[in-house]
Image (cartoon, rainbow, N blue to C red; front, side, top):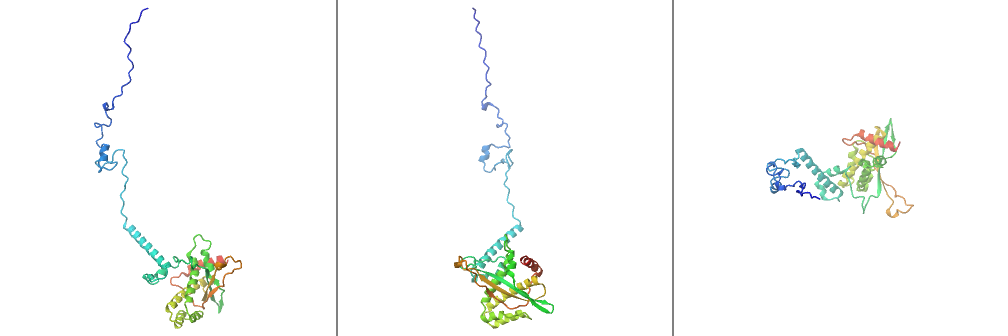
Length: 319
């Protein structure tokens, strides 16, 4: 048996050699690099080069632009508005503090009646809902009038003004502050009336409606006492009540109104100690009367607008 001659072994298929990275031409090596793109180390090392920018200030390719926007200077109009808003806020806080704080000489820094005219009727507030002397009663104002009916005169029934105007507040999500005008007026009138002496109280219950009746009211009170400050406060609140009564009378009974009369009432609630007594009743009504007065209309008073609103509320209450 013959043996085949041994030949050279067949060459094995060689795997493609993997070149060393150092031996390959670099795609982004120094020879092919974009001169506009600096080395990362150089950018990080140079604090004068902002992120995303190159040394010459241009944006680096593929790097987002800096989104920082310089602040714009506020316009002169905006600065004036902001200044006025800040001053108004400071004044409002200061006025509210003076109004709810106990009366002191500090109130004299606000001249004249500026403080009361600013706070009343829409911004007035007090601590009277808290102990030790919370509100414990209802104040009401009633009005009646004498109407000219041809050659005769007719006296109307008493109208509860407070019941009419409080409809602006009852069952309302956003009650109108105008709905408590007569409540505040009744409280102010009772307070001013209480500071008069007995002779002055008797005098204001008389009738003043002919000629210069307003001057005669003030002159009569002055002759009956030297309590000038108390007289001044009473005259102020009485004339306010008379002007309000005039508007109410004209709104309900028309232009034939000759004179008006008002009275203030207060009725306290059941005392706290008797709250569980099923037989407990509210105390009797405290009446503060006045005599008949002539008509007064406040300066710049819109009788038409007042009548339109009040008459609507009156008809809702007395359909």
